[in-house]
Image 1 (tube, rainbow, N blue to C red):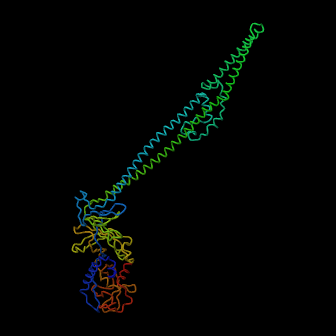
Image 2 (cartoon, rainbow, N blue to C red):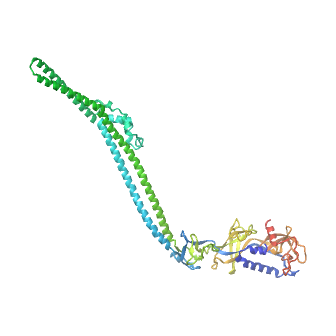
Length: 566
């Protein structure tokens, strides 16, 4: 890879570290070389070559606890917070040491208002529950009263007509089921009472031998008795008149006595006519009228029972709807009250795990928009990380591997990590995750730069290892035991071939390349150990003035890419 491209592919904070490493390597290779035609030269070497991918990164905790703001709604102010770098101990965790205290004044005001609303809603719920129970009892009373009225009307009908005729009429009209809940009458299929009752001819029942003991039969018997008494009296009057007439012809009685008997006979005859007329009127009018009245009252009782049942269903449904509405409002207001109490409790953030306090999120690099830096008085939003407590037993580094190297990097490869602050104490690690797609986090800064996010875990622990430390990462891909190799900058591309330039020879020498690192490249054919080659293509002189360029030469990084793409 070309040196400039290599440095551009690294984050800005790693640039100087990478430059220092490359400069040291060049010095090592150039130191024994001779200067020919104002160009630096190097000697091809033979020996073991470790194929490494060099990247830079910052140490971080792969596992950490983020203490975030869980207060919903508007941002809240930080009232108190522990100093950054504070070491949370096991004792702090046991005693629930407060790490952050958020402003809860507005929540307390909302809590008071919500409690008033909740109490009012609870009162409405109690009223709705009582109203529902009252409606149930009222429905029972109304239905019981309607059933009682219907039974009493039926008893009056049976009392007047007798059980047999009353049952026959009820069966004929289909009213017997009226007292049952699932009957047609109870389902609201009863029509008007008068037209249905008018279809019954009650006069055919107006006979003593048909009527059972009841008011109608008793009344009919009374009419018959009165007629019979009148007829008997009339017969006696006629018999007496006939005797008086015989005695009058013989002169034994006076004319006045005869006239008296004649008047008595006429009166007796009139009583017979009156008794017969009264009986006929009862049979023709009074009896059916009273029967229809009793039947109509029974029919009205049935219809009243249907109405009572329907009204009870309707009123109960209304009461139940009011109760459900009150319950829904109660649950909603209770939930709001509980949430406010919960939110109030979340204004106090206590220690849960031991570790080092770091402000903000573990992966936070910068602050966007109105987001303030974490400090007393700063406002934080919901789900914003306030404190991160990294796990010191699970440290690592996440780096971006250039697309030219991504084929080499696999999960499980050994890694050497050298922290800038402790260069003499390297750390070993292992690749635990390799991204399958280019990282889009910094794509807007350089769309042509394709980096794959790779996670490396550190083996063991170090007391000095802290998140944010800059480090040089060497991913060991493989080791070549005995090969010829030269610095990467010594190889260029010409007409699709890899070439090197020998001192004093204007024409390039074609070589076959193999594996490469960010510093060296394997030469399989074309050079032998000890051969001297130019460190860079002869395109410019030592003073930087441009010479005539070789028309077929290309930068060394293109040769590497061509080799890597095979």
